[in-house]
Image 1 (cartoon, helix red, strand yellow):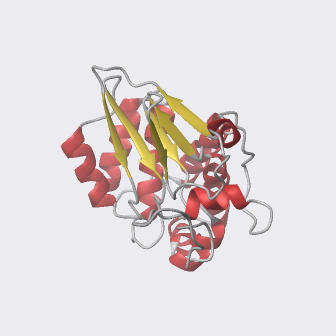
Image 2 (image 1 turned 60 degrees about the vertical axis):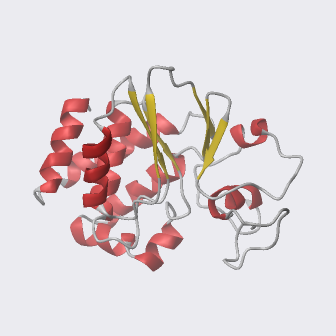
Length: 222
């Protein structure tokens, strides 16, 4: 996948023309293969002359995604992107958003990065619409391929050894170090019992007060 191809694909979907199922399945398989060997923590070294755009919670709003690209410019060695999770669910164009972002990741892996969010999960996709949308526009086979790609995504990033970017928030563990996040196993749906740290990174929320407290959402901490 070249950058020109990815940008043409994005423009085609603006006109409500989806790529064929075989191409989408192949692309998602490539995304999983690209991301699975990566550490769970991405260390980004953005050159001083370059710009990094951090984009969060697109939630299936394809025209918002297009506006981000129009305002911030196409990805390039001097124009980096970090999509910080929750590409899908809630919005009616989650398939288009996920295809577009993951195509950019394939086309420009050195300067397009994608963190996993709590909605990159089959359990959330069942409740909030992405599963139904993916099956309507494609098939269960493609939905499962999206799931494999989502499970392979890194969980957090550190930018220039100074800024920590994660979809949810910090863990309650004060002794936690970046190396533990970097080595965190992934490639599967998070389990409520076994994957506490993974759930905290995906689900925790910042608060106004110091310290931590249980989250009302049932996962992560405040």
